[in-house]
Image (tube, rainbow, N blue to C red; front, side, top):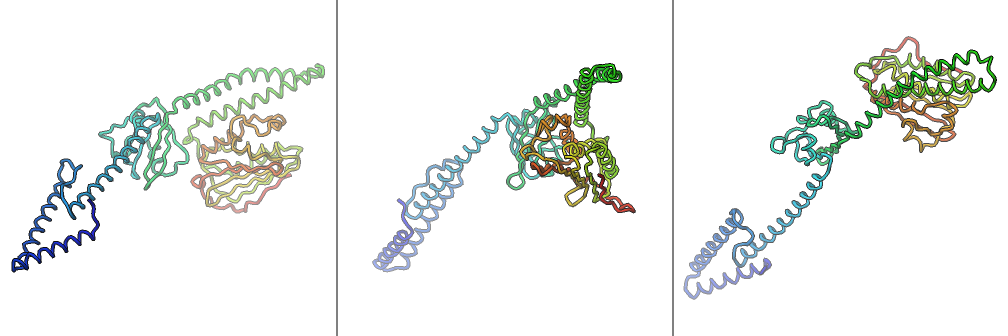
Length: 445
């Protein structure tokens, strides 16, 4: 039975008193105390040996040694702590096993690594998709097993906002999407998802659009040629036929523009960036686009202002940037009322280099902003019918910016106009000695 420390001290004093009484009766108190304390010391050593054997022997530790008094309470207390520890350890093992079983049941590959990338655990799907071997790969850096420079760069940069897509090192016909999450002291939880089917469907879509666009271009060219021939002799036709020819010519032109945009979009999705990017002058590019925008404005007399706060060079694909910037600026011209303002601003700051195109048009509800860059999405279909838009312009802009490590920011409100801002990283900008004449805002009416 468990006793408190006061009762043990009380028993010690009673034992000492009994020894003193026996010593008085025997006529030698000191010898009796020595013999009694010696016997107690021997008994204490025996109990300590029992404790040592119980704690460190490889045998059964479930039952504590038999004893009484202070040592008996000590054995019982250690045994209780041992049972509580084993119970907590078993609960923790059960929980870990359940987590591992749940992770093993996932179709996605799950890998845990430390801050240096050494692999600590992975599920069965990781073994299947990535070819990991439990005995030899445990503790190995993961980028030694996924031997792709892109993955190693992605792993070390600690910027995991966007996933990456790579072929499986064990099964090259499988495409995996990798997502990494930081936890603990920069440990990593890596999830690889099989997106082969989605990847193949996307490739089929690209091939279909490209092939159909090419196939449609030839018959449309023939139709357009015959319509142009008929329009040349329209004086001999009745007004009904003239109106029909004009309508067919307009619709043929819209279809040709749609096919051109589809082919351009397919090209930008598959182009090899390393072969097309070089140092270009944004000043010359924007000046040319501005002249084209003035011509497009025509009798609407928009006030188009171009302001450049930097004159450095830009590393990129000039044809792609021309297409993207033209789409944004021409859209501003199309959707801005007569004599409206269009402000074009190119500048550099600590965050990178930027292009802003702001108009004084009708604007649109901000609810449409997240979907503006989707193919054929139209915030106001009636406006596109008036302007003949294909719905692919901003999709082209999105892919161009993605090819140049940039992103598109859109601001708009009904009745307050719109602003489209292209943000590019500083790594794309090259400082250039200032020209002899200071760049000033250019305004044309």
